[in-house]
Length: 367
Image: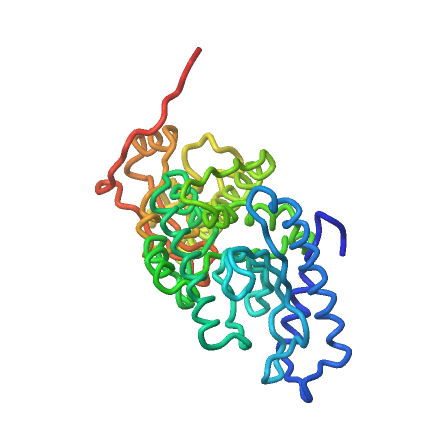
């Protein structure tokens, strides 16, 4: 382990992916099991740090990690994970904040779950009792989201921060997730996929903590019907701004690549495509390019991690500077919306500026 701020390395995820490709006989990994043991230790260390940070205001939590034989019944490596849970003495029927390695995607999943698996040693009436506990937990959370404006705002903003609302292994809208979680919580999760930094190849604890800080308010919703959420720390707000900026940057790179391909297909040099927002954010647009007549055009990019099917993805902000630039350059201006930038298949559309609805929001104050 590299220390408190560099807790999970790219190599850890690569090792799990490599071992998962194997099929082990005799229910034993041999020496390979030591790799999984070391990674489990790292995940538990992360969970312990999170426990120490959040247990007073959002707990009381219990910690659990993947343990025992890491192999499935078919001889394949199960994914390593660690969790903070509450609401039930059985983690499989509790609310969870879980971190786990997704070897196939090459990332760390961080999110909220209603348990991750069934408990094979619970049957009959005891199982029914625990399933009822799980249903009550889910209903308290859903009811608090629907009744509390602050909680509702936090919940609905998760989709803009890189989180995926998932039901029955499918991405759904935030509204659909509430409906499904109320009826069948076991199938519902909200999670984000965190990838190692491109330069130092690690996932820092500060990054993991940021995503946990955005989702952990759901654990508070179990406690009562009147929930007061603790504020984010200045460090968490700073991390939020940093990651939102990174999402916007990734969308600009996506459009930049498409523009270069277009310009090249028109027989023009790629040098006509310029990433202007890297020079300054005062231009009123993000990318300069050319049309089929080799006339300069101006492209403003608005990016979201939400999918195109999500109604919340249809709304976004234009600054006054951006709108004024559009008003002065309507014939050569393009507004592009990028959806699902961190999904497997991001999409982009050119917004029809003649059909949009604009609501003024905000004032400039001079003193």
